[in-house]
Image 1 (cartoon, rainbow, N blue to C red):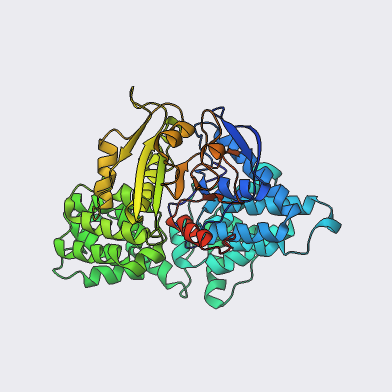
Image 2: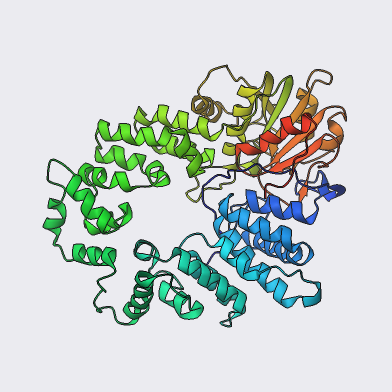
Length: 537
């Protein structure tokens, strides 16, 4: 099992300034490096990392080990801070498995430490706070037992039991219980022994354990969703297809809803491809992310324009966008995957809503977007999105909001070029169109990361009020901090979370942010207005 994973959702809160850093050592590329304090290193690694996967400069195992070591250290040195961080990491930043692993390591470090030196924080509550989906209690148990054996400490059991009561119901059992999982719902119940909250859940818990070892057992009458699903499974293939033959789909939708059918389960139940009628029956019950990732399937099946209009309205609705907490990159991925143009305006509106926090900065801003080889690293599971995609999204969006902006793509040579290229950001241009121009215009990818050279070529002292660099901070030579005059603000937005950064942070007008959302940029006007910015939890 991979130690870590992430979901493609966005944080609803702002990213903090990482703490003060001091010169010391070098970056992976050999430039002057600045060591981070422990909290800052942990935060940047957690919020930027497609953990469990290799990156340009670090293997997945090395990054995973660095993460767990940092969690153990802060769990003992700053237990209250770490508890808040882990809860935020799962519930707001939506970094799913990293938070789960962090909670396990938090509990282990505190149980192994000197009790007299450990603050009286409930380990049980920390565990419960990171378990937000019904398959996660089993994932936490799988992680723990794979490393530390079958003896489960009480705080872990109790936190898992709390989560099981909150998360285990009929529909989640149908969706998440599977032979493919190392720990199934029955295993979780057998180890954690949760107390059910009502008679229906009591019947469900007993049935889950019973049916695991006696698959043919009758479903209790109280479990109406399981009963409806079992009845559907008795239908032959012809009857299943006939459900969608009626002119109106109300009956089909009611049948599917009553049986807790998701689009994934419907696809398997039909024993064949999903046609337009099948999609149109299940679309009303699909969640926001499911709609977003299936636009290509809707087009290929021939979903009607009327239904497509309803989908578009949901995807572009500001409240739905905010509630979904999707990273802006998710909308870019959907845009690139969808074959028809009927989704383009919808996705343009949605990505604009997801970038609502990008501030309108007065004065003149130099925006440097790192498109070096190390930024050509995927952080989506399908490999369609790269770190430079995120850098370009936010660089162009910020440039469009600034009163005056120079947007520059830089590395250390573009197919024999100069190492940096200015990118025009016309007022009123669609962000998605701008990203197409970026991708198709040769603004990526070069070898090396000559950040100092890009600053020297494009920064005009006395003209630019600030420099914003979107990067993994792994520059190749020189000193980035010193290349920017001390009276010019330098804001670094870190997209990778490597151990050392390219400048000081947290003092004067040098600041580094982390995360994959637009909220980081809200710190700039706060800082320039003289207000304090802090951790978002």
